[in-house]
Length: 173
Image 1 (cartoon, rainbow, N blue to C red):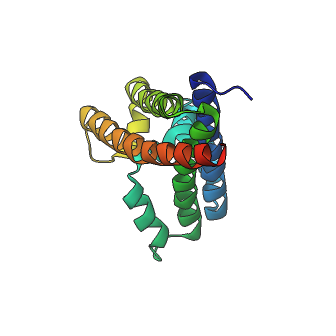
Image 2: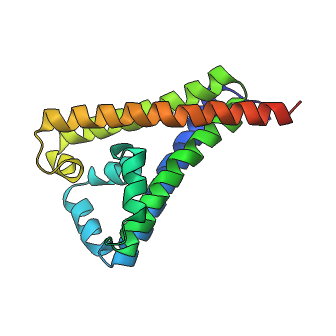
C-alpha cells in the first residue's frame, strides 16, 4: 500500500473522530444521560463537533487521573479511558499510513490542528460549547486553554507517532 502524508492525515483524522464519538456515546449511555446530550445537540447543532474532538480538550495526565478516580461514575471513567485510547490510536494510525517520519508526523500534526481549529471555530459560533470545556472561563481564556492543551497533545502523541514509525520501520526491513 502506498503511504503518504494525505493518507496519514485522513486515516488518523477518521480514527480520532470515530473513536471520540464512539466513546462519548458509550460513556453517556452507561450514565443514562445520552438523551440529554441529544437534546443539547438538537438545540445547539455545533455541539456535535465537540463530541468528535473532545479528547483535545483534556491533558493526558488529567485523563489518567480521571480514569483512576474511583469517585467518578463508571461511564465517565470509560469515556475518559476511551479518549486516551483515541489519541494513542490516532497517533499510531498516522504512523502506519504515513510510512516515514515526515509524512507520519505531518499527518498527526494536521489531524491535531484540524481538531483544535474545529473546536475554536465551534466556540466562536456557539459559546454554549465553550462552557463544556471551561465553565468559569471567558471565551478568550477557553480558546487559549484549548490551544495549550491541543499543542501538548500534539507533541506528546506526536512522539508516539515517531516511536511507532521507528518500530514499524525496523520490522518492515
